[in-house]
Image (cartoon, rainbow, N blue to C red):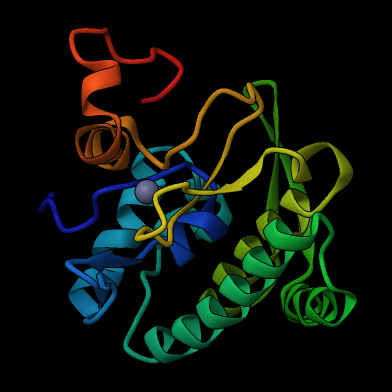
Length: 198
Ligand SMILES: [Zn+2]
């Protein structure tokens, strides 16, 4: 695995929008080639965000047709999460397109090793989008919504879920240390890192 992707949450919808990041004031797209897409997809499978069962035991992988569709979807999701994080509730007009995406590959379920796994019924691209839409809608439900946060580093555009109320940054290693170093150096000097932040 290359180090191109720096941050995974395990939530496919967040891990899709977080393929865009700010570096030195520029928006960088980590999902810029077919190779990136396959790497991103395989990483999500390897961390358990997707299960092989959800894609016919991985008889298929994303092909070139998936990338532009996924990027368009990423823009919709970013708008959804930005507006939702800002207002505290998801805009209805952005929820409906997600429901439509799931309609294209509706979900069946399989029970495996005490887990209930949603399995989309449809082509590979439709199934991929359906699972990401499901994840995004799940984050927009009452219990999860309070955990949705945008990184407090104003230069960062990453989102994450946190239910402890303690975490302020996407990643302690990335923005946490950066912010501490630049803004709170004296105050925090010599203190250990907050363990709530990965
Ligand atoms: Zn950040």
